[in-house]
Amino acid sequence: MADIFIKDVMVKNVISVGPETALIKAAQIIMEHGFDGVPVVDKENKLVGILTEYDLIEKSSSIHLPTFQKVLENLKVFKQDSSEFQKEVKEVTALKVQDVMNDDPLTLTPETSFEEMVKTFREHHRVNPIPVIDKDRKVIGVVSRFDVLKPLQILNKKNG
Image (cartoon, rainbow, N blue to C red; front, top):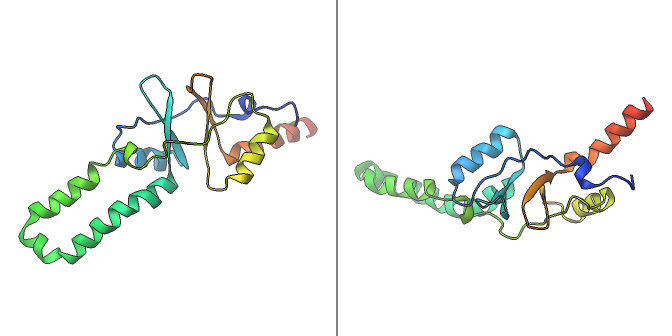
């Protein structure tokens, strides 16, 4: 597999979000597509971060859990004064991708070897997917753990 590179196995049709995208919208995109995460890009398609399921669970929970706890503690008050409840809901729905994204994501280049990609996933267990960027930091693809299996499918077809 020494002659296989990331550019041979990466997904080129990348779905990404912007830093100003509503967090709820980004979470819907991740769920609808069954992704583990999406690259966050600026208007020029340059990588500015990554938003993963882990970021949604870990980071947003620090915002959502206290809000939820407040709602439960003040349920009687909220029934009497729904404006306070609406304020709390507004805070949660106002969150943007940039509020919880990882702004220093691990990246790879299209020329990275297959072996290096496998090693990277082995060393960084929680990382998935990994954006593939060009020299200008523009996102040209993504690789995930699933892509590690692609060369095995190719070999199986050749030998089958």
